[in-house]
Image (cartoon, rainbow, N blue to C red; front, side, top):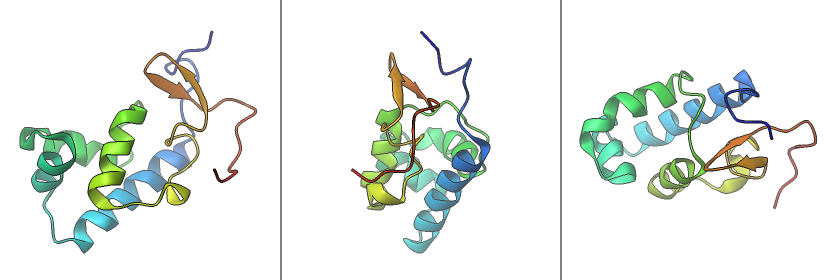
Length: 105
């Protein structure tokens, strides 16, 4: 079994997802604190939002990706494959497996 820490997400996917979250948050006129409250139910987690937006948080769970996507109304097709759960799962985190590709579902 390959754990997420052993096979990290591609840097480009981490950056792409972060930019998408940031773009959508700003389009709504929300602060990072507001997004943390809306998506995660905890306004104190604005540091987590910042890390995601800046591509510094590589181990985001599929559950949190879904929370951000729901709060910001992000279409699943726009989420990089390694972030939306279409990649191989190991526990509650996921890894981009060598067989993963950008097929839409």
